[in-house]
Structure formats: C-alpha cells, structure tokens
Length: 177
Image (cartoon, rainbow, N blue to C red; front, side, top):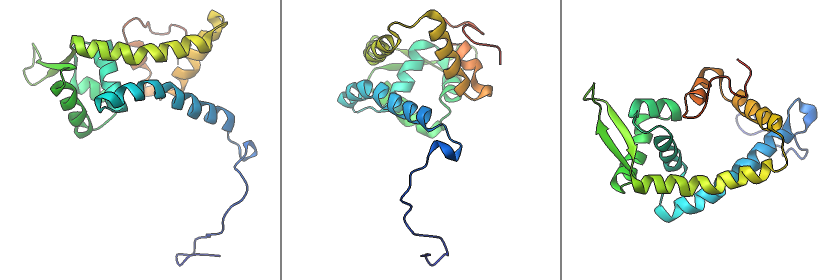
C-alpha cells in the first residue's frame, strides 16, 4: 500500500538487526547508560526547574571558571540563543555570575557562585558514584580503554577540548589521534 506521495505505508514487522551492518548492542548500551547516567541529576534539576542544558552549563563553568561565553558556546556546540536563556536563568538564580573581561570589555567571563558550586557537586556525585560502581573490579588498563573509547566517540576536531579540561593531559590514556 502506498500513500498519495507514493511512499510505502505498510507496517514493517521485523526488527532491525546486526545483520544490517549495525552495532546495535553498543548503540543500545549507550542509550541505556545515558538514560540512567542522567536520571539522578534530572531529579535534582527538576527541583530547580532546570534541565540538562543547565546541567552542562553549570558543569563546565565549574570545571573552567572564567571561561568566556564564546568558549562555552564552542564547548557545548549550541546556539547563542539557546545559551542565553539558560545562562540568564542561572545568573538570575545566583548559580553563575558574569564578569566583564579584563582585556576586552565586550567579553563576558563566567564564574560559579558558592550556590553554583554546590549544585555542580550535587549533580556530579551520583554520576561519579555510578561510574565508580560500574568500574568496580576494573584494572587501570580497562579504565584507560574505556576513556580511549569514549574519546574516540567524540568528533576528531573537538577532542582537544577534552585535553584542555583541568586535570587532563593531552594523550593521557589515549593514543594520539
């Protein structure tokens, strides 16, 4: 049966399988891991009326205090409009403050407040616990393999952002790409 545009509208009753050349088991593990990894912070964020975009901003402002709005846009890969709404809420609620850049007055540097730091820690603790529990019994080489895998999932042109985070060293636990 076809619709008026000639498209087939018959229901397909068979599942996509690995025979279709896809790595469905890893795709599904990533879906489920992400669902559960974000579930704890989602509950905390809901109490503030915040969402995952707020979480990402709070996280990176706390990891890189003083980063500029332009740098944050680069890290998050979102539009200025999307960031503006989220950032305004975080500033209005006292989680983040914006400071004029010392060299360029048009630049805005972002810093967490004590309230913002407390929120970042509250969001990271259950995620860190989940990672710790998942890595129980793993050897250092296994962790390095996991880190290498996750970094390889990031687009090559953005991998340097990971190395630039505090406490990370370029190439640590990774093959040079």
